[in-house]
Image 1 (tube, rainbow, N blue to C red):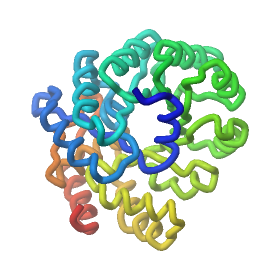
Image 2: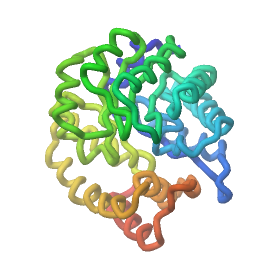
Image 3: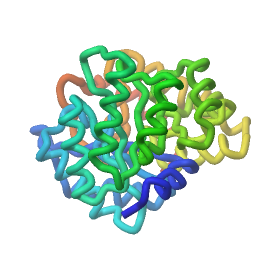
Image 4: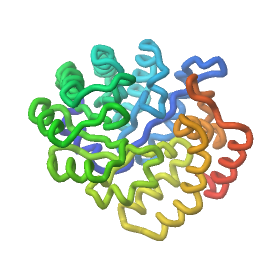
Length: 305
């Protein structure tokens, strides 16, 4: 088993990604094509992969499907790339997911929002602490997003109480809060950029002391995703600017047309490069034919992946 501190070291550098989850035409999980997807992505050089994450439609999976997704991921990627499992929802449900991920061999947990109801800082902290203490041998990364946002003060308290809380992933984009957290917590956490289409924010986050991010587009343009990450890491502003202008900004115009397209457009991209993962599940919707054609043109402009 990867220790929490070992996981912290792993996710503190390199590119991370969220593989999409494969469904057939009827919306049922397909383990065979999911395994093939992971085998295809693993050699491209991501430091770790998040199975059943947000882009993997965690929110739509049954517990049985979740178990199958995590087992498939850990068995396929064993010895190749670490697998972190998404967990979220109500506290006791999130604990069940985290413990199941541990049983299936995941190396860590990405703790996603508790969903729907708003909660005070103390309540969100209690949620995180209970999950951490339910899997004390696993490293846990808390995902700061939506209605599950923690302040620097509360993160300091959690860091004292939860030794295996090793990472902070930001999906909010509040610069003042991010600077405060980064300066206050220092090296206590690994810090990850987690805004949708994180490449657009990568240079700004690197300047804040957050050089690592998770790439959704790695699902369908892994070569370009790695090229962009290396350009960010080496301050190759020419390559960064070119790819933002030629791909990411036009990509955002499609992604921003509908709520939930941050996931749908990734599955569309996978389909266009011959790695079809099936449709998204409700409440998400797939791209229109016109939008698919626009995305196809953007991908083809990048060349072979």
